[in-house]
Image 1 (cartoon, rainbow, N blue to C red):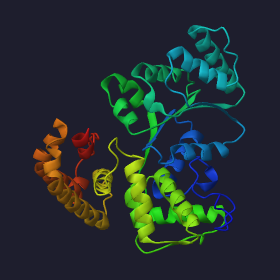
Image 2: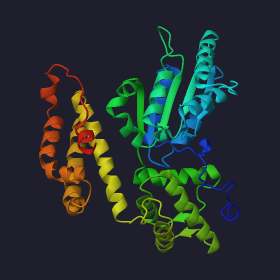
Image 3: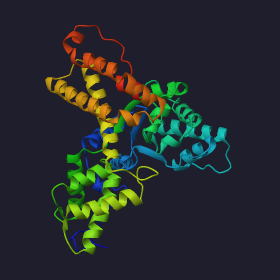
Image 4: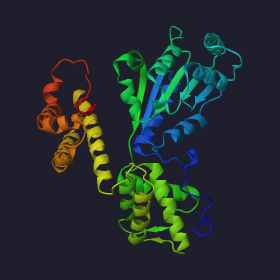
Length: 382
């Protein structure tokens, strides 16, 4: 509708997962590298998670475009199914005839197919998207599909793609066997403020005109706060901004226009919460999760004796930010779930522990390697 006015070849902020528009942030580049490595090395189970709209499907489609002709692919996108329906969908996408077959016949058919593929030098890959919808029983069924293997490799590569709650499900004791088979795991974080800026201009450039609109000072930061760095929400906001600019016959996106458009989206469309997002609250919640994620990474580096001086300084910065967030939010946490209440009461002692664990690199380097346990922040936040 507005492409001609802005001298664009296509709309730059469509919601479809188009690999041609893929922006490689640090998190997305890491996910693609992990996926590519896992498939090439036939690593069995691969787990990719991310928030709604973070770009998981786009990354998967980008990988699919680059697979060689020796890979036989089955894709499952509907995960609210029964056990028999799931097996039938997998077989059908592998090109097998599933008509009038019961579950036992379907499993036998799949096993025979995988053996034939291995004999012919081909690599079957199963991708299950929206895997967070799979019940525990279905996840166990998926695990059993991986039992067929040779002495050196799995006959079926399985990639689970889903929202963050999938990790919570996999952490359950009854799924320990599946969890232990996951060889490659990656979570796609939201974009930083600078990455949000680069993402917007990348999509404009890919659409044909990087200078299609002029974002005034502070406007992109405002979009970032609304979207919390989630690509889909950035697209929604920017598409409405360009439409509004087109209606006003201007190519300048002022702070007044951005606040008006983003404010309407926040209150009317309710992208984050049932009662509609609050512009002040969303960034704080997302910043908290970002700090926790980075502290976990620093803790892992310290455990591996690779924490640099810059890493120490980064840890101090994030710990200070976390302490401030806790102080600002303590009154609100009291009305949350009991585990958050517990978090507020015990955070002081936990902070002391993480400081000691993070900065005692020299001492740790002299100790014998110990079995890696679950990270502190993962234990605190479940």
